[in-house]
Image 1: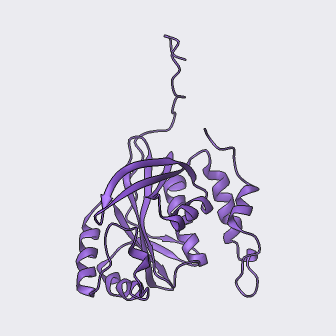
Image 2 (image 1 turned 90 degrees about the horizontal axis):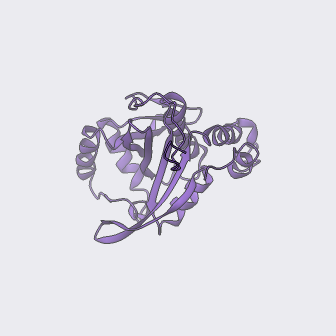
Image 3 (image 1 turned 90 degrees about the vertical axis):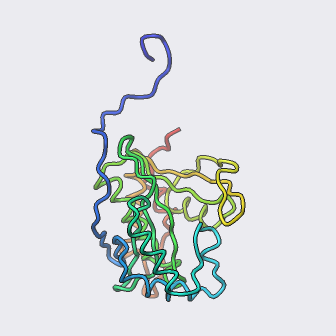
Length: 236
């Protein structure tokens, strides 16, 4: 309560604004995430073209790209744009996907992950999960952000499922939020806060531990199960 008897938000002691993400690599056990380079374009285009039906482009505002020249032009624009800050996802040195930090807001300490596109060989792999962990860890542990966001087309069931698996809390749907590829998008919002991050992080680290996988690479315990044993109470 303030002096007028009005309810107000809790005070924020965090030193604001927070730093912008650095132009450096994030290196994990199975994957490297680093700012996109033009040298990634040809390999990324080849990897994405392995999706013969172009399913990976349905819910993205751009693509698909039939020619490598078209993809190179997109990559050049993406590299030159500071927000979204596009990153390549490399497995054994080979670019197999991209993701970005976007809507970077140092003043309130909020940041979003988006423009996520995984080639078929990256989907449903340990590397696919670890790259998301690395980006989240940069936002919270390295840069000290208060809020990490995930937004997607409300009709994109795989993206919504991925957000929940990775520890994001569903916040609601913004109806008719935007238009892309000539069609309406209702946008589903998800987030992780800094108070929730320690539990989410502990779940990631337990899942990513090599001991959590058998000799055939199958997980012993799911990420959701492991996170449940570490989760802090959800903020409301």
